[in-house]
Length: 111
Image 1 (cartoon, rainbow, N blue to C red):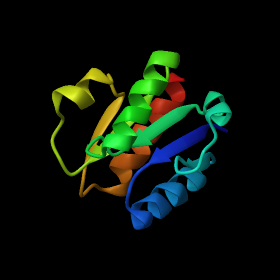
Image 2: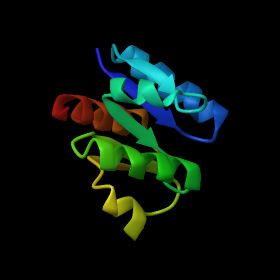
Image 3: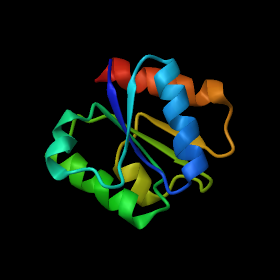
Image 4: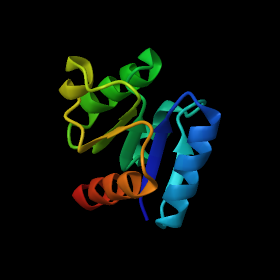
């Protein structure tokens, strides 16, 4: 079972991500209010790279843990900043649940 950190501003999407993650047998954690010491327990990061706070979190995690699989989920196309994270997947909103599930499975298997 992997621990998957969600850095997404939309409450509805955080809930959807958490439900998909649970259905795949993993544990979802909301990035909001997460203590710094808990970041070591994260196996995969799912983020909306259009949000500066989520992008900053991803960059900080990438510096500390270069091997951490990252999935970008955004309505915006990939940017130089999101590409620099070297995500295992970029899922374009709106997305099919199968696309999100495939990205999550790939990221967990890579970890």
